[in-house]
Amino acid sequence: MRVLIVDDSRSSLAMIGSIVKQATTALIDTCLLPLDAIAMTKACQYDLILVDHIMPGMDGIELTAALRARDAYRLVPIIMVTSDIDKHTKLEAFRAGATDFVNKPFDPTELQARVVNLLALRQAQVELADRATWLSREVDQATKHLLEREEEVIWRLARAIEYRDGDTGEHVSRVALISQLIAAGIGLSPQRCRTIYLAAPLHDIGKIAIADAILSKPGKLTPEEMAIMREHVTIGARILENGSSDLIKTAELIAQSHHERWDGAGYPDKLSGTDIPIEARVVAIADVFDALCSKRPYKQAWPIEKAYAEIIACSGTHFDPTCVAAFRDKWSDIQVIMQGEPPRAAIGF
Image 1 (cartoon, rainbow, N blue to C red):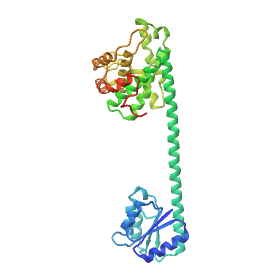
Image 2 (cartoon, one colour):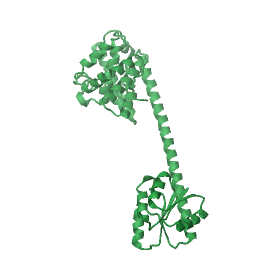
Image 3 (cartoon, helix red, strand yellow):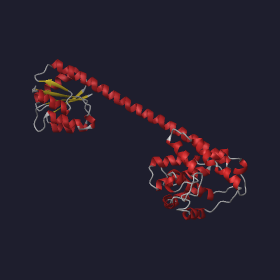
Image 4 (tube, rainbow, N blue to C red):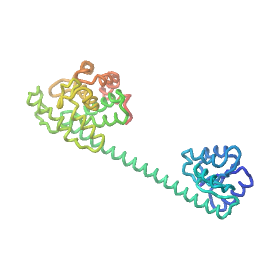
């Protein structure tokens, strides 16, 4: 604990300092001028301040008000030492933030008792604040661990789905990274970009309910088979529905709507324009682009330049023009991703 005594009388400073020193082991500083006291309180955190009422330049009430205006001294006990017992003076001091009063001439024992009690109160405040800080750190750490476990489960599940679809799992990684870049390019917040990055891998989770004969068919699907394949979006949304976290809620939106088209010709709900959730509009571009660049049982991989040209050509029909513009702006980073490396502009996850 540290105590500051402010009084324009050297004799009063010496006397009050001696009395306080006998009652506590706190470190004691003294100051003759209020303005110097303000400078001292900025350089050092005090736990109790005793101020004289009448001082030159700035009186004790003004000094108290100046200290209370700073967060560091919002709760620090301040004792006003005064020979003025006028009720109005006391009210003004209390309004300024004085904690207690000691009237001159004062009883040394009474002053010591007030100092000891207020230092004990301050000690309790400090310990409570330290405890609150510790608890906050513990909660943050626990929350971080929970998020890490949630993310791990999502990535493992997404890669399991990709293996069943005949892929090694790299598709979901690339879609996640490209989606993050597009989301950042259209100005979404870092937190929202991160959520899309983590939710995107579950866009095709509904495929676990689609028969292998359809998923792995080497040729073109019949209209009946295509209808069954398209059911994966509603199945995926049902798997993810009623989630309690923003991540799962976002994944549900993406699973349900990533095959909608800007012109309304998509499925399953024929949504168009901004009626399509922005998360789904972002992932739709990343998903189609990487699918075009990937070898599938029914097709060969496209060169990335050809796939890029297709995305640009479909701006305003299949895809949101704003998202396509962000895709174009991030093209150099997307090329890096397609080479199997993390993008330079990726948010630090």
